[in-house]
Structures are given as C-alpha cells and as structure tokens.
Length: 545
Image (cartoon, rainbow, N blue to C red; front, side, top):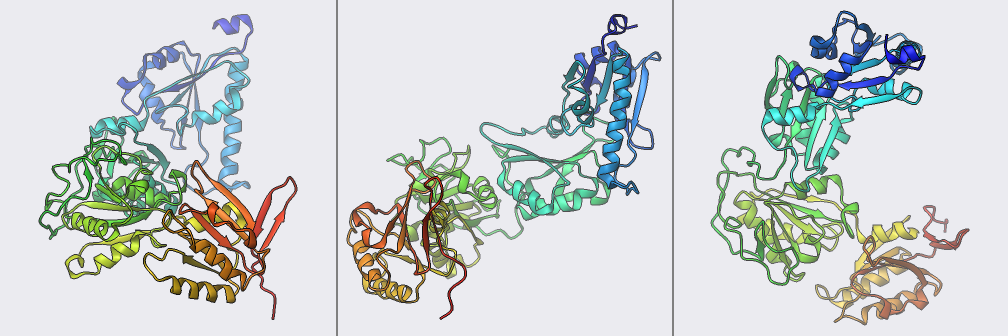
C-alpha cells in the first residue's frame, strides 16, 4: 500500500517520457518513477501492441497494475456519430476516468509515452484532463527529433538558425511555405503522408538537402536521402530532416553544369567580414569569384524584401535568402537580411543596377546560388528589370533567373491608411533620372483625367525638390483641392509616418525619397471614425455616368 493510500490522499500522476525507442536512452528519473508506481498505463492501437510498453518492459513488475489504453480508431474510418474526432474525444474521456479511479484510490499512476510526453505525445490528452485535479509530474524524454539528428550525425541547428517542427499531416501548400522559409526542419508523422511531404520538399527547393530517418534507435532503423526513399516503405515512425546549412556540403551537381572564368568582385565580403553596410567593403573572399564547375546549380533569384524588415518577407523569399551562397544588392537593402555564416554579401550604392545585375549573373554562371536583394517588390521600379535586361544577352541565356514578389511601398502605405487602392489605380515614378519630365507630366495628366487613384514613387530627393510641387499643381487641374493624399514614409520602419492631407495642402518640403504618395480619385473617401481614427478608402463601385 502506498503512502497516499494509507493517508487517504489522492495518488500522484506521472507522464513518463521513455525516449525514442532504445531502452538504454530512458532517463534515470523515468526508471525511478516506474519503480515507484502502483499503476502503469500505456496507449496502443487495437492490435494491443504498445511501443511504449515494449521500451519500458524490463522495468514493469508482475505486481504492477497495467492499464492498456486502446485506441478505438487510428487511421481507419469509424461509424461513431461524432466521426473520428468524436470517437477519440469519447475514448480520452473514458481513459481519463479509468486513471482517475486509481488516483482517487491513492494509487500512483505512471502513464508511459515514447519520446517526450508533451511533444506530440498521447499522454498530453490525459494531462489536460487530470493535471488540474491531482498532483502531477512530467518526466521529459529524448525526442525522435534529437534521436534522428544523432543518427544522421549532423548538426540540426547552429548559431542563430531556426528549427521548425512540422507534422506531415499539414496541407501540402502549408508545408511547402514553411519549408521554404526556415533554416532547419523536421517533418514528423510520415507514413501515408509521405508523398505529399516529398512534393512539399521538392516545391520548396529543399529536396536535395533533405534526409530520412526511420525508427531512430529502434530495431529496423533506416537512414538515407529523402529523395531516394521509396514512398511505399515509409512507416508512421519516420521523420524527414533538413539539417543545419552551416558548413553543410552543397547538394549534388546537375550533369553538364556550366562554368565560367573569373569576373571582378563587386564589393564582396567574406563570411567573416565586417558587418554589412560598413563604409569600406572587405577584400573579396578567396572563392567569391572562383569557378565552381563541380556544383553547377547556379541561379539568380531576384527577391523583394518589402518596405522594411523581416515581418514583410514572404516565406518563399525567406527561403531564397537562406539558400543563397551570395547576396547582391544596394547596401541599405542588404542590411535587412540577417548575416549567415558562409554566405557572401556584395553591397554597393543604388546607382549601379546594371553592374550589380551583371555581377550576379556572372556568379550564377559559375555555379553560385545568388539572391539579388531589392526593396519592396523587385518588379516595381526595382532590380528585376535590370537583372532581366542583362540576362537577355546571349552570354547569360542559360543562367536560370527567378523573380519573387514582395510587398510594395504603395501596398504597405495603403494598408496603413485604409484602402485607398480599392479601385483602379496607376503607379508612376516622379524621378526624371531615367525618363524626361515631359513624359512624367503627360502620364500624370492622363491618369488624372481618367480619374484613377495615383501612387507616386520617388517623389523627391536632395537633388530633386521641385517635382512634387509641379505634380501637385498639375493634379489640381483635374482634382478637387480636398482630394485626400496619403503620405507614407518609412512604412514598417522605425521612423514610420503615415498621414493624410488635402491635395491643396501637400507641402513638397515634407516629402523625400523614403515617402510614397497616394493621391485619391474623385470617389476616394477620407473620414474620421469613433476614437479619432482617420481612414481613407476608394469604393469598389463606381457611379454610373
């Protein structure tokens, strides 16, 4: 009889983590708790075989009361009126009641759980139903994630890398997005989900890096490359692993890979160089421009970082930035990208777009994976055009180029203000560095006379101070003085400022290159809501003539 039984006190509940499968990986505390328990409980499918019990078998005594918690359904269908979820909820309630009866009688109950009890473990369902009623202790265990990394003999994460744990039961598109965005990952619960999981790895571009581990530390253990794993042979107790990228070997080369002679470096910085954005770029890394005929996986990906920091990045862009060997771009935009060990950064000012594009394509032609970093969306007054223009030359015809979208400055400012771009709109740049002011003025008149909302980029700079005033006066020929104009400056950044003024009150002195202007149409509304909040929106319905 236990002390609790003698004292008439309720028993103690334990959730006991047993580790990934090898009994020798059970913790000392797990063994102690099983020895002290009056009741040993474990889950199993209807066939009655329990992996958790088999791991702890050497520590289960004949005098232990055993409670086998047998699932009524696992992957098969059910005729329960509540469906699969209803059947499980009923089972968990009944199983908790069985354990509660022992606890009420003062017995100590140890619920066995493979891996860790609170990591995708069956025990958690008992914990949520009983832990608030009885004294409870959870004994952590080695997870299958740690076991898989150990069996592969490769670091899982290092430094500032991010590890993402994913269930293979997620929708395929969600898996793809998360795999593309993370540094390292483990996908669990494979089995019948494996074909979709493999497609997600392939669609995210991570399949060449992915490893496969089956029944880590258990009998029948198997490891290998995910790409070469037979889908029909994959059990539930298997995981897919994206190990650390730091110092990892490059994926296998594609046959017939092109190589190209050296080209001059463009402000290259070695992996251990000073922080990006420093005034004096470091000397080129020894291999930054060297031919790399063995890899042959070179490509250029032009990415948009959005208007500010990491909150504006898409998962696809995050993945491309993480996968790149080299980052090329205007230093201000490169500074938005976290520094990664082994990744080379090539920063320059914002007036050498063609040179940046050619440099990036030269690197890719020699097998480097290159991300050309742009602000906002790379296709909106940004680097995609410059890269594609150079890539159209015969010398770069075989270099793969992709453009990944980003949140534009206009979209960001519009969202902060409300929905001024809710109907037809035009986007124009006020910079006359690449086109004559006469062309700009003609297009402004056309957009204004068509009653389009107008998003104005590059409105002014230290050397261009008069265009905003000229544009305002031109627009007033077609728009009411009361037309709302949204001024969005540094949206998403530390100096963010978004406010709305009348077109007649637009002051050029308050506008710079970090500002985007959104000029409303005749239908755009500007109202003050309760609490003083101002919103601007353009109705989707246009009045009939």
